[in-house]
Image 1: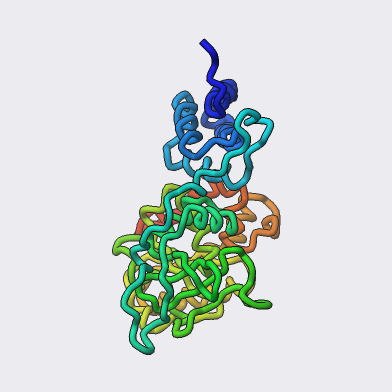
Image 2: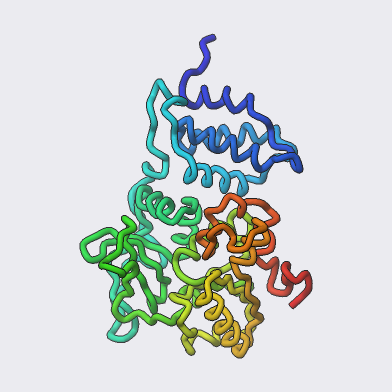
Length: 351
């Protein structure tokens, strides 16, 4: 019988000869190497995922599907198809560029326009096309899964703005909405983010739609939102955390929002610069006074512990850390997200 010379067939034979992942013996590296190989063969996501599942069945122990998806998504953004691996068919586009067209986004879908003073007027927004979601993931250096999680949570959407395609950070309350160009360019010299007229710059985006019982994770800016969602997926923590976004370190939390934090577990994931540190300390004081149980985890401390070097190899924020290969290791992921409302894994004791 003639061998299967399709890209998937050649990839299956190739990865069958690669080392299996064994816990405690470089299993992470072995698994990521296979994920990168599948990407380099130019497979679509569905083909690569099926082969990854087959290969994983013989690992000791097999990886959970959530970890596999994170590794494959990471390979998708860190590597690229190689012509030498797919000489018969050439390089195909990533599957994310062939996802069905835009579908309604439940939280930021077109709604009756607010009356004057109640929020910004929005263009028609959607969850975006597969190409738009893939473009944003590449632009921010995160997995497509992180972008899609932000969309499902109603915090990110796509649409037209000032004659260009843009991606938007906001939530269903529409109290604060920011637009960024999808091509990564500034709107004008020195203007990367456009706050829509009527937005409340100090409103914590997402607080009113955070499910009760979930741990609130307070971050600064859209980039850190996507980075933290990427890390949460890798840590298996996404179902238990609700991200809330402040639109700048210098902002104080809007007084109308502070009561919404009362009695909640809040972890502030602070950026490494001085502005991020000072902003996190100010938010902790405001939230503590409002009756929340609050602590701060600084990305600089996490990265320095993991990499063993001051300055943490240029890691300035959580978006930077999500891009760093060291961030994928369980020892780096585990301390980031609290296990529950009542226990702090960093301090190892109840709050």
